[in-house]
Image 1 (tube, rainbow, N blue to C red):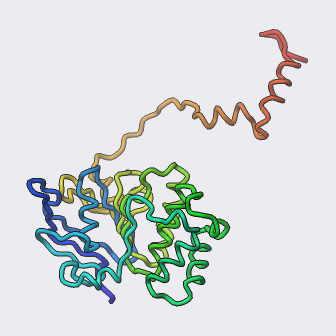
Image 2: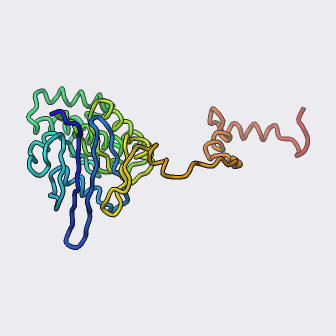
Image 3: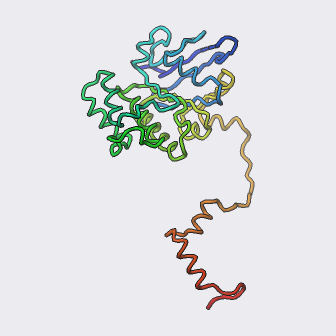
Length: 273
């Protein structure tokens, strides 16, 4: 189906006994874009994703995903989406390739081996494809997890805090993967508590606070909410990177450099000729 909005959320509410988690959430996601739902722990991000992916029923409001009503057409919604949770759901006993083949077979797709090989190449995992997933780094495991989510080419993917627990290099790998999804036409709903992640990835950012969207806009629009920046002159201090490079030089041969300094040392205040 072709829809004006990939995801449309109107007045969604959800409570767990006396705890009001969502208090009337509204937003739209444009097809082929990355929409970041930014909020602290407990803001209701995961609850909303669970409602949109038909794993949980809302108390009030409505939502459509790929043109299908979440409450009235759950089977159609599930066929249109893929959900990647906060922790990589890969089978560590299997190899990366076997994980992909398994999901392709469960989806009753033809040529599961070819599908697996294509995704391994797309996510730069070909060389590691025949290794057990238990040997993968955090970034590789998350890339494999996202690759598994893309089997069947779902038009919409939910990424619920995809970089939780990853080191900086692994986070960058995942960011590059997410950008590639949007460039390929996939609509991405990303939940995160990391400000830099939303800033790096999102076409639009919605700030979820205490169960409601308090602001929704592009990064530029959100920045306009604050007063214009003041120009101030601050004395620049060397960074640790600059100190490190100054010490090790281009070759990194610190021992040789120390020997040279020892051999050619002169008394303080005198210049060597």
